[in-house]
Amino acid sequence: MTTSSDGPMDRPGDSSSDGPIKVLIVDDDAMVRAGLSMILGGVADLRIVAEAGDGAEVPPLVAEHRPDVVLMDIRMPGIDGLTATETLRRTSAPPEVVVLTTFHADAQVLRALRAGAAGFLLKDIAPGDLVQAIRKVAAGEPILSPVVTRQLITHVSDGGAGERTERAGKLLGRLSEREREVALAVGRGRSNAEIGRELFMSVPTVKAHVSRILTKLDLNNRVQVALLVYDAGS
Image 1 (tube, rainbow, N blue to C red):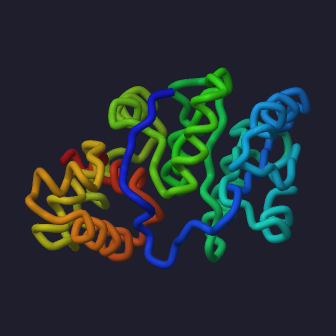
Image 2: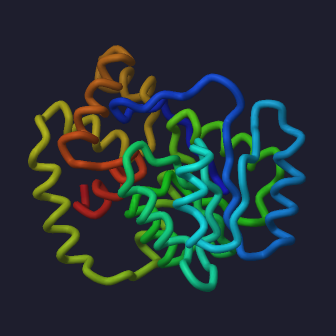
Image 3: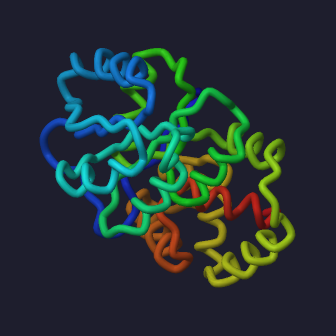
């Protein structure tokens, strides 16, 4: 899994809480859950607050434990990870969702990203990379490189491409010229610091622009901005 580094969380009202990063593990395979628990259980700044074997268990567990990050299996019997992700993202102050999958190019993964997931990880990810990915997403950083995003969009056909292109163009048209420049830079995977250097802005100014972009376009995170930019063909 390729990771990308961006600035601190940009969504207005979001903030990292003090203490360990709280993680909810969701996978229908008990062995996978046990493996993830073993990897993450010994990391000082992470705390597993609950496990679930079905997407139906996720909303009540999130309400009870308020995890910062949910590791979500995409394919489960009953309520799958996509449906569970869509449900979570409609709640107030939802946790960040990281999709777990065995496939690089998966239509379900792309749909989960469009629904607001912060990225995806392959289940064979190295333990150290998994820990770092959780830390990044808890800090508001997407864990999806522009290359992987482009591959997903190019190789996965989930229908409605023409309609999405028209809609994306209209949405980007809501932005000011400066906001659009920032959005395009986000689509290229640039960090806040890199955008600042390219556009001659301070990092706080870049963060303010990103926050306004998310609010104006009713998006959850930078991954969705990147998907919108690619949809628009920009």
